[in-house]
Image 1 (cartoon, rainbow, N blue to C red):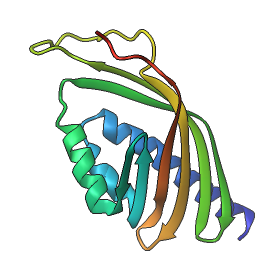
Image 2 (image 1 turned 90 degrees about the vertical axis):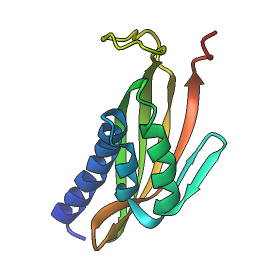
Image 3 (image 1 turned 60 degrees about the horizontal axis):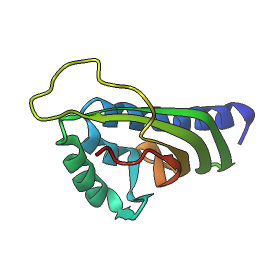
Length: 148
């Protein structure tokens, strides 16, 4: 793999990370499944999703939470291309989230402390569709306590 091919692969993987955030934050959560390989996995705290169908089903339910306003911020993104069709990634993610009360529609919503800060541990694979997540593991470092 030459330098240009490596840079293009890194950029494609970085774009997946950005697109994931955009889709979940702007009402297209079900479409996150399309960013994964057919056998891809998503793993979070006490949750594991195997394959596009499970990923799509869970994120479809997430997308139905119209009261939820969120912004996922990914920083310190580092993608390492490990072969012509494989890469790994690590990014820090900060999530600001507010669940509106019934009937509440006012914007902007409170943006005090993040809901969580954590890491995204990704593996990527080049497919006929282009680069896709083959796995994503979310590890939390800080978690805001539930509001009473």
